[in-house]
Image 1 (cartoon, helix red, strand yellow):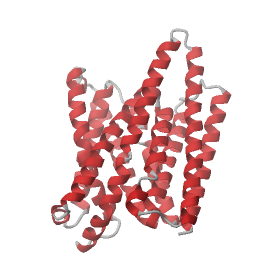
Image 2 (image 1 turned 90 degrees about the vertical axis):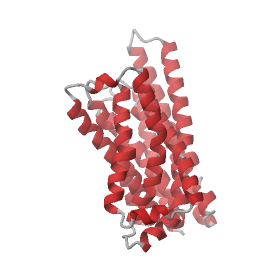
Image 3 (image 1 turned 90 degrees about the horizontal axis):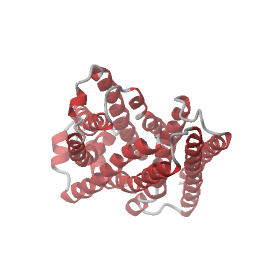
Image 4 (image 1 turned 135 degrees about the vertical axis):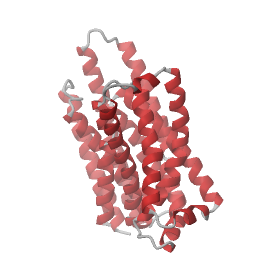
Length: 340
């Protein structure tokens, strides 16, 4: 159990850091950065990783039942839309607030969703898991409030920024983050549906147990990547952004975005591995720990990169309280899982 918790936390750290390199790209529009990111993280990285690491790749996936393909494909397609909306939310309301609201929605819905697939755990486990999720959710809400307070503090310092334009951008960003978070819970469902077959199929081909996590990610990322590719092709044309790829900083930008892609993919694969190590409640417990760790990491990185430098002490205190709640929530969830 401890091993699963540690891997889930590590996966969350990677997810929380994945978007950080975007701050250092130069000469790219939003469409350039994220179209290249999604191309790499949804297709290039998972295809290379799967072909290199999964023995019997063709046999495993050609023999996978159609109903599992359909369930994983549709839920992953929704997840892809959610992740795409997440990138838009970050663009509207920043890294810290974007993570808080998006992940808060995921924790509320996604942590409970696998119960439908895996079944309800024993009452003593369920009690602690639900209590831990509530504490985590309280922490995410406090972080969201901290972000809103920070925005108000910054608006007061910007004489050229009107209240109405602030509210419009903030409302839009929050709405995008919430809807995106709801759709992104498809990842947890796809993982829960596909894992039983893939775990058995991977073992029959002589693979180590950890390879199951790579196998689970393959249909999820390919299916999720389809919608993102279509959207960004349209956006690159609509915004006339193709020419921005011809910048002297392309090589630097490509390496930064490749780091983003590897971190994003590795975080998801490590979550799947952590879920397998956490037993019957792995999807629920792992999902809560994974997403909470990612929020905490994103917020800390936001502090380090001066996102909160102009925030009031009230905003920062709410941020710290939220982080404390999330850490306590992780401990409660982990304790509950240990009772299984």
